[in-house]
Image 1: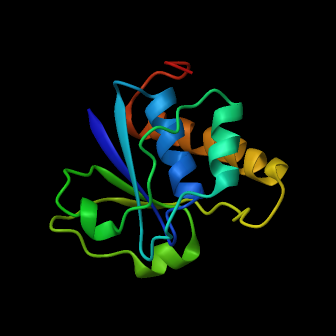
Image 2: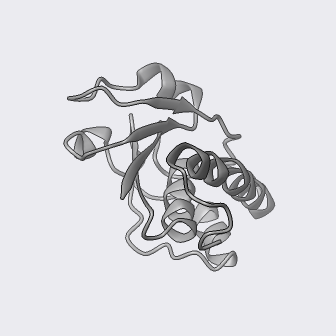
Length: 140
């Protein structure tokens, strides 16, 4: 099974939604982790609500510092904000990186979080399927 690290600055919204979506849509094929370069104290309420409204589990979602996942066997790092791309740490071994920036809906209405959730799902899931040779339509 491939492991993807979804990295952003606060690890409270976009990366958390990415982690939950990958773990739901590609369950058993790709394992997603998320972390932040400067993690916030909690996952954004809007991110939790947007995931739950789509029937995605939010169990276990907590902001983590990138240092907490440095020793994981990561196959791909996906940065979802420009700050994380610029501050992306050097991993113990060479890890391919992919930059897929998404709008930060913090402080906006739930509809913004849902729009970003849908964009992440529509762009990240097919990208991972293609990269890892997974047939589309699996588990989604």
